[in-house]
Image 1 (tube, rainbow, N blue to C red):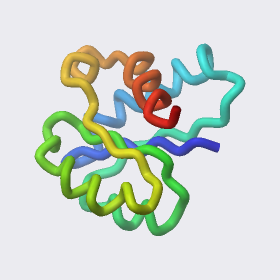
Image 2: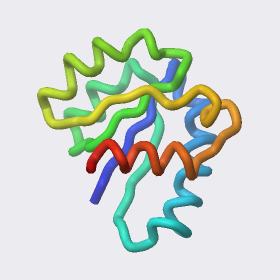
Image 3: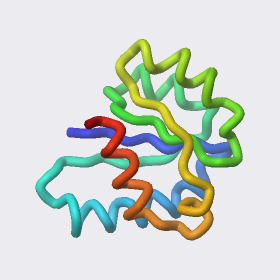
Image 4: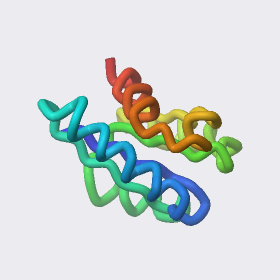
Length: 105
């Protein structure tokens, strides 16, 4: 099971992207077990402490948190990156998911 957590200010706009990513996962990555969900950045610690997260993707609007998140979570084996702004704006779930999975390889 690979868990991908998207984090933004309120978790609302990333929730729409999660739906697109889940749709892409069902068609293009049906052979992989993927859990994709969104949370507000304020709840990131709680999620990391309650389940094994493999990847954290930050919404472009909170990219200023990248170094803090990398410092905090990468030592725990969690890959951290910022979602590409164009892919985020166009809600390209397939591209965001592909980029996320590339982080693991």
